[in-house]
Length: 625
Image (cartoon, rainbow, N blue to C red):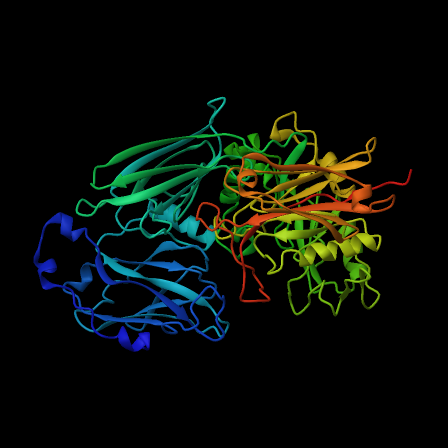
């Protein structure tokens, strides 16, 4: 049945509802569609996880209202939205669904005098011809609408992040806090709040400031505390699940609360424990953006700092597109520098690849991004004062029609580039959690090919985050060898640079894999680490890019916090000799829950995708005796 035809039948609201003047009913939303619909704008289907047949290419609802001018806000739920889907009411576009794979609640203001008493038409559709499977529904109208901040602050935030948060009336107060379990000290953290029934990220009555970064269902707190408002209902109690974490290294807390009255209050306290020991290693995200300066996404500079701190990123590198945006000044002002050492960098976005570069001396001019030959591009990058590291970003993605590691440009058998191109990048992204690959090993094999051909190139994990939550900052990250005895505010940037230049980088995406050589016993030991909320189910060893061992990890072991796997291998059993390099790669099932949801590939090569976690060791070279 065609949904657009089916849903045009009038959705009549019982007249008794509108004749009741009690304040409780006036505050009750009017539901015009309680279902959650699967839509597809064009064939073929985007992901094989969706049904072969969608209900329709659009959502169209027709409904009558009494006292239509009373309604100020429209709310709905959405999921897996990649393209721009317009929200039109009676022929007027009043908003668009945010581009976000998460399942979340969303609200848009209803312009005055737009609603009518009869034959109102709500339509959600897209003009994009790129296939997009989405779910949308649970549409309701509200008489009350509010902004958590005054009009001046709301206008400023809207300009900085391109996004204005409007909410239905929030009725209950919840105080949240998080501390380090052993010391009782406050910690930067992430609170995630979902509706226990639908699983959607919910409206939160709070707004971003110098301490909090807030989106639907998400609060990053710099000091581990947040006081927020949630919606309650005296007639139908609402259950919420509240999660608290601090990124990859820490435990995850979970609590449930029930809100059933307008004057409800609740307090939730979490104790977070560091489950993944990382002595001598520093957590780095080499690929961070903001909407405020890149005009893509939804994140302000302050929100970027708060999200990095809340995910435990100690070395955030500012990589605005072709701009030098220094995080350090604002980090010091709001107190975030206690938890991190910001580094000034730049993403040089050329026609022949995107390259993250750092460190940059403050006051320097950005590298010229319109140059085309690689020799000129790299010469210009390294001529930028201070720059020593150049990272090839998302090398299997196409930008402006060019894919650096496409077979037309790169021979994976020889590790060489066509047309005489010489890659002078000294690092490359192996995992970009904001722009994943359908086959996570494909770009790892590209890296192996470059190593075999003589490139000195370090592996990198990064988030490429432009948002507070759509792509989570630090979800994929790079651990670098660096003295970390002092405060994260005083990390040695020269040591970090040396770690990249010598290939001492560990790529982490929910797991951390270490490979250590014992020259006395001619053996190597593999260790796989991770928090209690990720699981490792396999570890593989590669010699010169060829798989020589594959070990299945039992679930009881792979689910443990901290060390999930360890085993020692004789070099002779691996067929390894002087001049070879070894690498260990651990994998496991990905996170689908909203507290750390892994987004699907940005440019997929197949409709089949299974979320994963992964940890990649540095390449371990066996030196000549």
